[in-house]
Image (cartoon, rainbow, N blue to C red):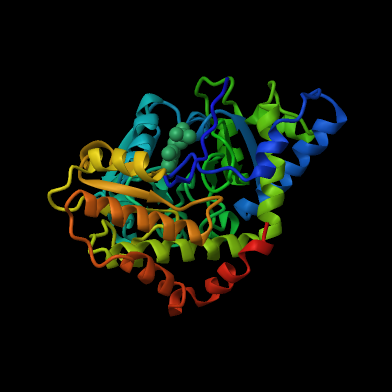
Length: 400
Ligand SMILES: Cc1ncc(COP(=O)(O)O)c(C=O)c1O
């Protein structure tokens, strides 16, 4: 027998909670993936993705987690010896570097302290010094909760004639992102974050300039050969057997995003971010990332002095049902992370803060007075920065 337990608070940076409509859609019986019904769904999904990516470029749907789309971008743009520049400010920037090295690119890593974004000056200098053909960037570094200024960074890359590839795995749908307006050549994302689906699908939006390069690049590839997907898209199909159930869910989640409105989803995430940050500060906790780099989808918090944060996180989960993430690599034990992306409503942030406050107190950490985190969080919704977003909160129940 499958035991189901109400998951009260999956507050990790993916996978994220699922809307019931998505869960239901995924339980539909199988259909022929080469039939008319599936072709209509595939075309609807491609159009919906263009909206979320804010692009007229071709979108590609892969069966595979976010890393699959990252590898596909590398496999199609890089061959042995290709000079590439990778900005590394956390675990996922490092993943770009590891992938490009696996494909034998001449990889230069522009290292940025974990918890900070990259400046346009540093990028410009690195491009001038290393003359890359392709630059790999991370929009939202989930390991630290940093959002990079992709609009400005891509402008620098364009001036220098480099192609740009951007990991928007933990931000697309939840943070402002304009593939075409910013001139991103390949944007990649995954299903299990702001798109409110289980893990298992990943997506790319590929520019005309990227397609031109792909034609010329000779690296070995088969499942990740993007041209196969482009050709199959023309007839509304995937080149290989697609993850049919996840595609049912994708069509539904894209409908939900459309009914909420993409900009309103961005505003809702901005509100969740402000509520989280102001609430945590009111508990006398120190945030890892300063305001100008703060991610709208995940917030990293320095471990409170004297608290074994890994032990404490287990306690939070078992006593309150709120599941938080720990730090990764050298930040393990030094931070915890609160995910606030996807199918999350403002009330859930208040509950999360309450869970953090009460369990910290039980661990002997004298956070501020009872309720102060939730109170600061609630009043954050009225601050100037999120005034528009307050309306989002008030109208929340009518959105989905
Ligand atoms: C920013 C970012 N990039 C890439 C990935 C990799 O995605 P996946 O774990 O789905 O392969 C993640 C996953 O957490 C991520 O947060």
